[in-house]
Image 1 (cartoon, rainbow, N blue to C red):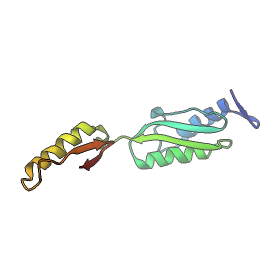
Image 2 (image 1 turned 180 degrees about the vertical axis):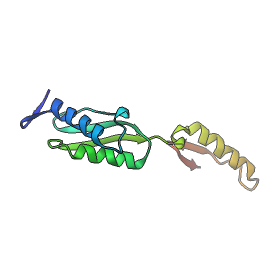
Image 3 (image 1 turned 135 degrees about the horizontal axis):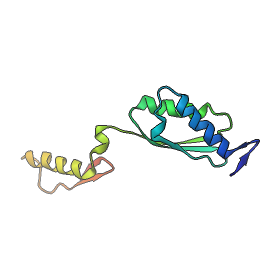
Length: 116
């Protein structure tokens, strides 16, 4: 356990968890936190952008937290769509347009479609 001033990282972690529980707009059961040298990365998946902001604000209210690493994802129907799904749909759309040449290459990487 690392000390930062008079506050240990373990105490900071416990304080962050308490702040999550107290925050009415945060589901504390879906978030995790570790604290090392006063830096608090939070992990998890929340249901909305507002909840992500509320979680961030909760961490920043804890005295002694020097920095926050925001690793929280927002759970949406879109997050279930894979690059393969997107590539399949984009390829189908290209095939339906008879004016496009057959020489177009399609690449999907992290939900970004690039045509060559």
